[in-house]
Amino acid sequence: MDNVFPNASGPDEFWSYTLQLPRQERAVRIARMTLRAVLESYGMWSGLGDRAELLVSELVTNAVRYSDGPAWLRLRNLENRLRIGVLDTNPAIPPLFGNRDNPQAPPACRADAARGRGLLLVLHCADNWGGYVLGEELFGTRGKLLWVEIVHQGATGVAA
Image 1 (cartoon, helix red, strand yellow):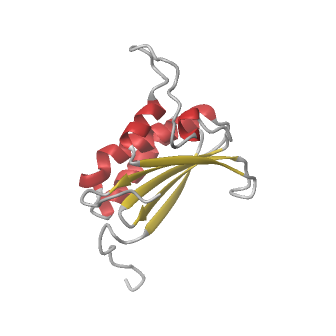
Image 2 (cartoon, helix red, strand yellow):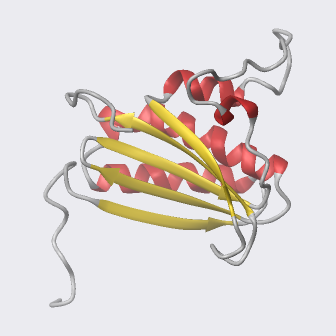
């Protein structure tokens, strides 16, 4: 098999994967399975897996619930951090992502509420985050990109 490349040398190598997800609840599970496969293949699951899985679940769930079209999951390894991005067709940036220096707390949630705390969990689990509105030129649709980063264990600092 001359066309098979060897596995990456390690977690410091740059890589990027993008997956288009239909607007279906099962997209969340598929996104988590994809994340696990990618991180395991680079030997990064044990250091990043649990937090990364929660972040992917919440961001994709947000896209499925609040947009009217497909979403795209992008996983990127950038030096000392994993960046997870989710693009969707709803251009509204959630208030928590809107102001990096002063994220707005959501309205108070009842302890037994089924919804309303997901993005707050994201901000508590991520080392860095942001979001921006997308024009029609990317993927031929309008929408937004929400992204989060997790610093690899053993790495110091967060790049902006």
